[in-house]
Image (tube, rainbow, N blue to C red; front, side, top):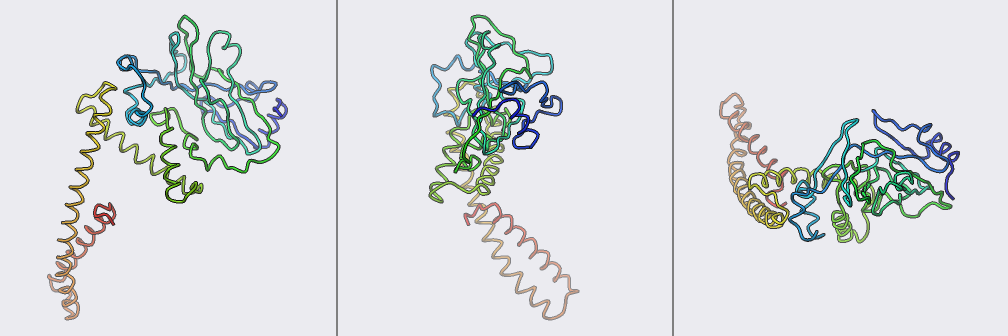
Length: 333
């Protein structure tokens, strides 16, 4: 059953689902709710193919998606528009963006994001695929805007380019959408991490299968995704610095550069492990000297002796060094 405007207002008023704009462009039920749908606006952040680099490619290899994600500027240009500014889409060109509104679906509804017919008649579509919204979804829906006309089109931010329709489910799903691997897209904004994450979905799914034989629970998955996100941000910065230092700008150089970076990182890791093993052994030897001497001084009650403070400070320093070593796990424990 498809919801009418009456149903949509009831669900919104009862807090059964949410449609949230931003502080400058809040969601307006009065202006955006239609007889059987809700008008949805596009964001002000867009990604276009980098023509200078893309023209050097004969084919897009999906096995290189990881390389593209780590340094998306080699494939895409990020464009952020201010109010009143426009983006020109050439004939046949695709532009990536997302909805301005964040959509939070309940478990009793599913949805679909459709293009508005007024724009469709002008030759503009809002997605290649993926218009379906699962029950329980929370986030910003990705859009792929395509100009099907033979002439350029001016695109403005915050346009009501799409419409959201809702479908009532007669039974509650026995699968929680939030526990699925592709929920990594939830709440993502259109940034360097939001272009294509399909390979990461597969890796998380494989990891959960190898470890537990099935899917992680929601709490475990959230922590894992947070760790991956933090780690990838550091990795992206490191790779970006490496690429800038070597003046790597062409897509065909990506794989070779990443392989070189990976080998360099492995060698660096081995060196660090060796250094920390040496530090651990030396620190352990020093502790074997300091601890007996410290016990001897304390047993004699000679805590005013300068040697007592030397041994105490040395002991504290050694413990601190060991703590750093074990904390970073360079010795493999």
